[in-house]
Length: 534
Image (cartoon, rainbow, N blue to C red; front, top):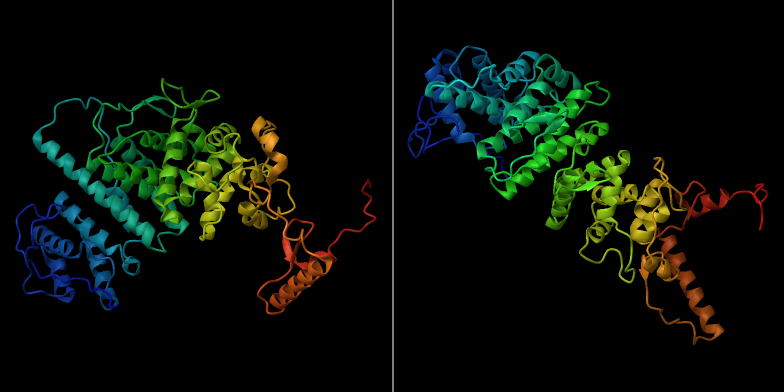
C-alpha cells in the first residue's frame, strides 16, 4: 500500500469549500487549480505579509487536515515549513494568523521526523506562552464590549490550538519526551500551573474548601462542545507533562489537579460518548499523579444521596467503577480502554484502605452461591474473572492484579473468588503457586464468610472454584489388569510428548516458582531440616 502524499498548496489561492475551523469563514472554491508544491510556497512565506501568510497556510490546513501519513520524500520541505511557521509565530501577528499558524503546526506535528525546529527551548517557550490562560483581573464584573468579547473568544481559540500542538509535539517527538524538555515546560513555562488553570477555568470549578470543589449543578446545561474540546486538550497536554513526575515535590499542585479531575468525573458533556472520553482522559492523568494524592478523591463531606463508606465520600470511586464496567462490556480495545482504569483502581486500593474496602464490597461481595463457576455470570466479579484468562497478557495480568489486591494479596482469599485455574497465571508470575501472600502490608481486618459458603466449602473444587456434581469413577468397573494397561498407556503418551518437546514436566521450587522437574527434585529440602514432625 502506498503512503498518501501530503497535499500540496498553490500560492495565495483560496482553499476549497467552506471552512469553519480557524481559517476563512467564507465560501471558497470547490476544487484546487494550479497546484504548486512546497518548493514554490516556502519562499513566499519569507516575504509575504500577514494576510498573505494566513491565506497560504489556511489553504494548506484545509487540504491536509485529514492527512496522518506523510510522503518521506517531502520530509525536508515539511521541516522547513515547520521552521518558517515557528519563525512567524515569534513575530507580533494578529490572533487569527496565530491560530492559522498553530493549525499548520498541529498538522505538521503528526510527523515526528520534522519536529526539530519545535522541540527547542525557544520553541517550547513560544508554544507554552501561547497556551497560557489570562485570568480576569479583580473587578472583572464590569461590562465588556462586543469587540472585547470577540477578542476574548479568539484568544481562547488560540489557546486551544496551542494546547493541541503541545500535546502532539510532546506525544510524537522522542526529543520532547525526554525529561529535560518536560522540565522546561513545567518550570520555565509554568506549564503545569497554567494548564491546570485552563482546566479549572474551562470546567467552571468553584472552590469551597481545600481541594474541594462545589458540587456541580445537575440541572444546569452540560458542557458545550467547545468547552469539552478545550478540556480534553488540556487533559492530554497535562498527561504528557506529568509522565515523569516521580520524586517531584509539588504535592499541592498534584492534589489540586486530582481535585479538579474529581470535579470532572461528576460532570456531563454534550453527549454520553464525549463524557466517557473526558472520563478516560481523567483516568489517564490520575494514573500519572502520585498515588498518595488519590485521597483527595474521597476526603470531602458526604452530601445527600452520595456514595459513602466509613465516612468517606465514594462518589468518584463509584463513577470509576461504572466506567470500568462500561469498558469491560464494550468487549474490545481492552489494552487502551480498560487497563488504565484497572491500574488506577488497583493502586488506589493498594494504598488507601477505605478505597479498597469499598471496591471489594462492590466487586467481591461475600460468596453465597458457589454452584456456578466464577467466570460464568453477568456480575462484575464474573466479568473480571473471565479477563484473567484473556489472550492479551497485559489485560489478564492487570485484571488478576486488581482482584489480588482486593483480596489483600492473599492467595487463599483470591482462590476463593476465582478458582485455582483462573488464578494460575498470576500465581506463576508472582511465585505463589505454593500459596502465601504478596509483599504489601494490609490492615488486620478479617473478611467473614457467609454460612452458605462455610457449608459448601468442603465440596468446592479448588481448581474450578465451584461445587461440582459428583462424577462417575471410570475405573470402578475395571479389572486390575485394565487399570495397569491404561496407566502404562498414559505414561507412554506423556513420555512421547516430552521427548518431542511438546510438553515439559515441571515442578514448584521452594520459592513458589515453576521450574523444570529435575531442578525441583534437586532443590528438595533436607529431611533433617529441624522442623517438628507429626
